[in-house]
Length: 199
Image 1 (cartoon, rainbow, N blue to C red):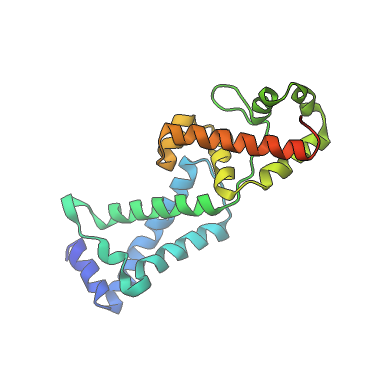
Image 2 (image 1 turned 45 degrees about the vertical axis):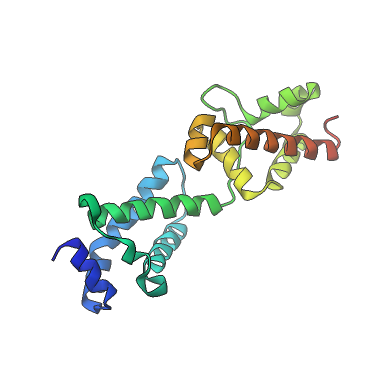
C-alpha cells in the first residue's frame, strides 16, 4: 500500500490504519518539532513540545480529517515529507504565539543591541545602561508591545537574524519590515517618554 492509499484508508475511518499512522509517524513528528526549534534557536519545555504534538494530530483529524485529506502525494512527495512541512509550519506558528522575552543586551550580527538602538533615540540614553530602574522600565515597555511585535524583536535580537532574514521568515517585504521596526522603536520611545526617561 503506497502513502496515498494508506492515507485514504485512514480517511475512511480504518482504525487499524490510524493506529499504524500514529505508531509510524509519532516519533518522526517529535523529531521535526525539536529540529525546527533547534534551527530557530528556541528551547521549550517537554510539556510545550507535547502540546505542539497533540495540536498537530488534532489538526490532522479535525473536521473529518480535513487537513490530512489535503495530502495528495503529488510530484513524488512522500507522506513523511508532507508531515515534515506540516510540523515545521505548525511549530513556527506555535512559537509566534509564545510571548518572547527580549534581551536589551543581546547583540545582532552587526554588533548592535536594543540598548544601542535606544541610544540613537535620545542623547540621554547613554546613562540608561547603568541604571537598573531604566533597564527594568525597558523590559516593562517591551512587555506592553503586541506579541507579534515582541516576536519581531525576538527574531531581530535574540535570534540574531538580519532584517532581510526577518522579512523572509515573516513573509513580508523589506519596506514592511522597515516600517514595523520603526513603529516598534517609536512605541518604545513613547513608552519611555510617558515614564519620564526621554524627551
